[in-house]
Image 1: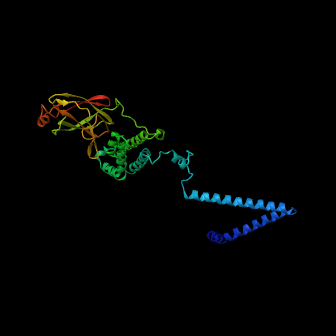
Image 2: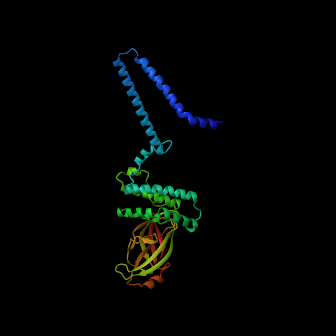
Image 3: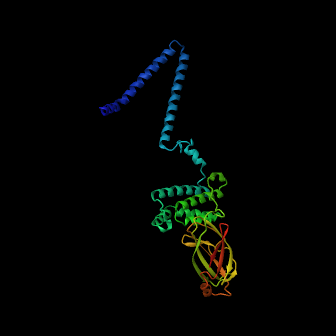
Length: 341
């Protein structure tokens, strides 16, 4: 019954509205006639003109308001607040965001999208308690990052280098499995670098990157994985003893060369710029390395010392590897750390 009544109303509601309009118009005309009855014609004409102008203004105002409401309805987000407590419109929030046409703005926008997408990936694929590098989860996570964000992250890295901002921490993080810690490190680093590029760093007031703490409150552990000797016949340091290391500490470490104490193998010269990190299947930077690096947990790095080719050949240096060549002294998080080569 209710549906039938509704259908009948839908059929006749146009006629009903028209009849109501006629009644209202009749009342208005009658009222106007009463008002002007007995007035001189010129006064009656003025009242009619004012009445017509007022009606015209009301019609225009009503039409303009409805047109604005329709445009607002077509844009669902217009005029809404992004947060129930913020009181800010979407437009106001957008004006506070860095300009996405600049490199700084693109870095900030990439950091935001990457963190949001990574959180969603972790929600759908919880990180296992086992070391991520040793699980099938790492394969899936690396594939996700490679497909969705690796090209953008590498492009950001290249653009930063073009601006003279080479960043070892970002290099290491991009080449690592996107665990929750790595995602946070990449996000913070991108925002921090964006702040370095922008004329108004206040746009990135939340972009703060914690520095590696000297005298870190966790024990330092560095594992020696491999020693290899190479001779290239070049001038300078032709005979090198390379050592491959891994940071097995529970936190990131800051590594610098401090000293080498010889046992069986002496050096041609002391070189400090010797460290490289594994990135994208290659050791960087090339050709020989840098003097200071930041290494994340489970991250591999390597360095070298220049054996004296005037006293030793490649075979002799190789024979003394494994603890008899000498002692490498590193400065790790501000503390001495010794490794037997």
